[in-house]
Image 1 (cartoon, one colour):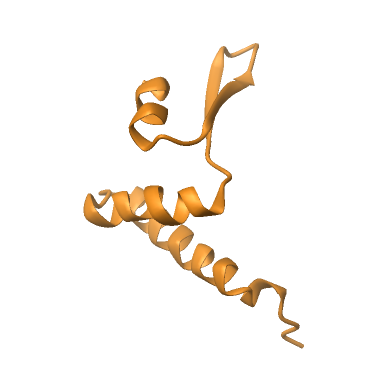
Image 2 (cartoon, one colour):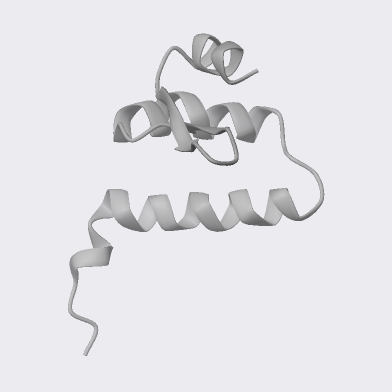
Length: 75
């Protein structure tokens, strides 16, 4: 499933998350891929349940990061 996801988005990497539990991880750490591929997909095809709330929080945090506001001194 993760391979299909990586092929669909044409970005990210798949790696071993935990050898003991035999779990994998799909990671996208390229800001441009997140901004142009991942976020638009979930805006066009919204998640449901609490995952939608998690995405909304992520999207807001990414916007703050993109604008550089995370580096401002708020004190």
